[in-house]
Amino acid sequence: MLVLFDPPPVPTSQAVSVHNTRDPSLLWVHAGTAEVRAAQQEYLLSSGQGIWLPAGIPYTVEVGADSVAFPIFPAAGTRAPNLDRPQRINLSNSWSEWLIYQFARSIGYLRGATSDTSLLDLVAGSRYATPKEEARPIEQVPLPPMPRSPEALTVAHSLLQGPDDPSETTDHARAVNISVRTLQLQFLQETGLPFIRWRTAVRVAASAALMDAGHEIGQAGRQVGFSTPAGFTRAFHTQTGMTPRQYKKARPVIPRHDDTLATDFSELMLPQLQPEAAPPEASPPSVPATQTWNRINDFHVLVWLYRGAARVMVGERTRRLRRGDAIWLPAGVRNSITLSRGSLLLPLGSRHGTPETRLPRNLVQRFPDEAELYLLHTFVANYSLVRPTSHDPNRITHSFLKHATRTRAGAAEDLAGFTPVYKIIRAVRNNPADRRTLTRWAQVLNADARDLGRAFLATTGQSYVAWRSEVRMTEARRYLEEGVGVAQAARRLGYAHPSAFTTVFTRAHDMSPREYQRNGWQHTDEPLIIR
Image (cartoon, rainbow, N blue to C red; front, top):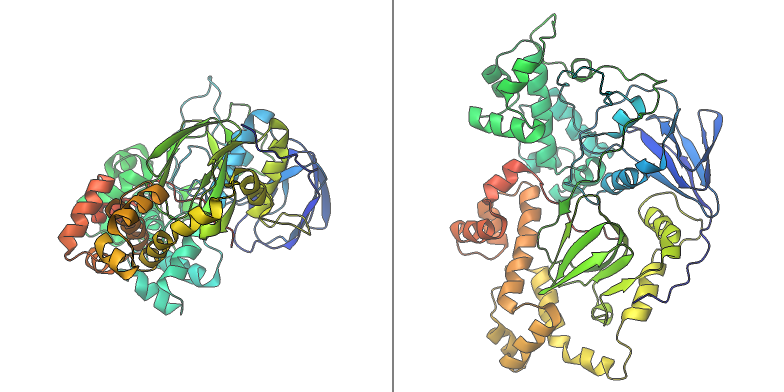
């Protein structure tokens, strides 16, 4: 079934006087043409071409009509560049899906998924050996990307200077006069990593630099802040895929004049990039498989399967998507997404969770093939600064709902019948610690308990008890990622004792809350909401 959507022409887009003070970017043209003005030069790019824009150089982008260009920032785990001027790069069409995947990661969507290739490797052509080349030695461990916000950047610099700082997340937030939530969001949105995982990545990189300089394994782990050898080994293996002993054995010692840990590790970590390096000839890496946790969001989101296959669970129903399908993920209803290798599910837009837009009759619709370029344009315009002067971020979601929402005459009356359910959803989303049973809710709302239970199941696809548990687990992951302790998280979520919370969390995630915090974010988060 097709969405009755006749795509309009793709308009021109622009981003004026963009100034990335800390991070470089790659502007890559997927289709059509784009003009970039940077460093007093003009660069005309066509499909398959890109330009590397170093940090600190202001630039202006103009994307032509019927054209789509992606502004991509380095994904988590890439190294700091040493290119001091714009650099052109030519890429074959075979790289397009991997580059779109990199854009999705750089905006915070599909975060948690990993790839063995970085954007900087792509520009430098430094990791593509031909079959005749000998195996390369193990590379140095890179620092995580730096945040851009002044507050998060201050915290980041502090941790680079003292990776063994034992301060809690709340202490770092208080030091720069912002909330813990704001600090977490800055790190997550600007580096792709939760704060705790970013700090661990710094410690791992610092310990590797110390081992490169000749320090013993135990000494290196202690000096950067790991309290136990087991914790150090586990964190190092999670970050690099090898133990500290394996890393030290494979790496040569880099002579140093002193035993102190340098504030800037770049000189120890990776060789300098070559500005004029040729583009790689090897095949692009495949887009990795990804999966989200079960979660309940307080907003609606429309996602579109650009490539591959996906399995999406909404409530108790599982839907399998093929290329071109789009699915509406309703607010207040459990959802989870599983993508096979090579698949890309991209967000097209979102709406705040109001009952009026909750229940489209058909959650899955299919966009026609000829809409693909316009949908990619919408994806870029909604989630980057490259957009038309007059841009409506809700155009696609409005079109989808127009053809998918209930249209029969009795829809308004049906919606009114679910009003008590919406009141419960709003109340529990605002306060997950609410312990009222469905029977108690029925008394509060002057409703029949059995009717209310049936309405809740019809609305969310779950019983009230199961749904409330999913809400609590969604919030639990957020709390743990912010550095909230297990006992405090349990209290906030309404559990009588931390052990009860630990039992429920472990059953849902196959790991304890403390293991989740130690491992960092391993799954993807919910699609982004447009604010």
